[in-house]
Length: 246
Image (tube, rainbow, N blue to C red; front, side, top):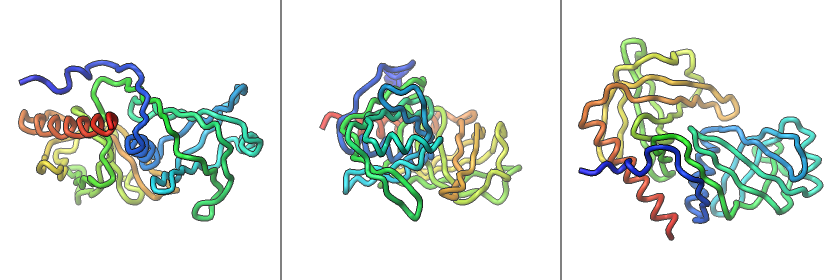
């Protein structure tokens, strides 16, 4: 049987995404994962940091958090075009904003509203294809072991053949130890439940959204579980390509 991941072994050349649903899915992933954004204004050397705080597909708009340092707001007010770049698990996601943004508020906090980009550069630099979990495909998980009892319950954000990224409500970093192998990681995949051991790679708490984000690497998976994960990732990958072709 051919390996569906063969063509994705090694870094891939950059792709330009233009399908609205695929652009939404990738921006939503940056928002949910609270990945930092690098904002760069045309003809200026200074870099600013921000976050995606809203991705609204129905209205076709996104909102960026206040920039650090905050003097970048002056360039926003001047209507200067800028470029946004982010990295998620080895994938570079970038787009440009030529239109003036609207300075406003979201949940009482200052933000910058702009149109959803029509094109997004997607550059996969890691070996294993990492597929985001769609909003309508929530995958619930449980993580437990001899050093983690009772189990932590959360949701899966994305998955590859070698690992996945998770989110938990609240600050659970005190219960998690990077480098620790937990004997029981269970994910309720749409194609069936899978259970394996997993190593915690990293975990960080984001106070603004009151969530903990964690990265896991699957540990000594059985052949059955490996095939199950590969089938699910391949299914997500095929769906993403179908959307892109549309």
